[in-house]
Image (cartoon, rainbow, N blue to C red; front, side):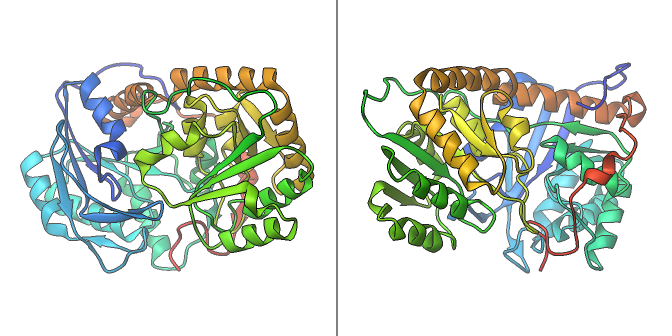
Length: 413
């Protein structure tokens, strides 16, 4: 958290309205579920879409046993930054729940963010708003999105971010209000270490989990595996996307395709068991005009599962891995191949990274830890921005922001 509470002025209970397009199922609402379990004074309601496509799978919204879930149809578009909500359920919730705090999980330049801000102005003008943003690529959006972003910055009281890389962008864009670094979390019970170890002489299983999109580093991984053709290994690739064809062609050229098992896109509840079939996870993301790793949710899932992680230097990956894995220079095929070879051949290193990773998750990324940070952040937001100590930035710090004049990840076309 980029600020410490100097005084406590806000009284319970806290009425919070969470608005997030992908808060569709209990598994996707674990931060909120942990929040209300740990802090009964939080009176929470969640607004989400009736259906959304998550990680290549269509997911329908379902009820929750801990708080009301209001479902509303997405309108206009299926693009995350261009769609709008059917406003009627939101208006009803604002009138009935009378939230003191709107926890808005939409980028400041998005249509949905602009819509919610307008509805709050009309139906909940006294509610404070905190915006959860993950954008870590500096981009000057075309009009009217630039106006929408500036308006959101004026209206929001605070912002919560998933990693330090996002803060650089907010600073560069002139957001001078309090910012809290609240990471994504992981269910440490569902994602837990497997029992048993790989038998001596058995090939190491290298894992990849994620969307197979440009920038996710599949080409780099494929070329690194080709460099390791003489080593004993096999691989599991979880996910799907347009880069699969090129990845397969790289492997096929070196007669390596039969060593790789492709699962395709899978539902969220299938992922924990797949980690148990791996010996290490590779996150080879490369920075592009659309992608710079904002957090790397699969990293904390793998660490919770007792897997050593090898990640690139892209975005927040080194920040999340810390000393619990190996980091290679993004885009460097040989550096990645050497890291895979080192991790695969050194049982002591794998055990050390696995133990450090699990401990790091328990101390920083469990949903209980994230919920406690969220609760404190909410109370500070409601008590007033004056209680935050503004973060001190080194002179010239914002010059480190990656500036791009093309489309950034998830930006409107």
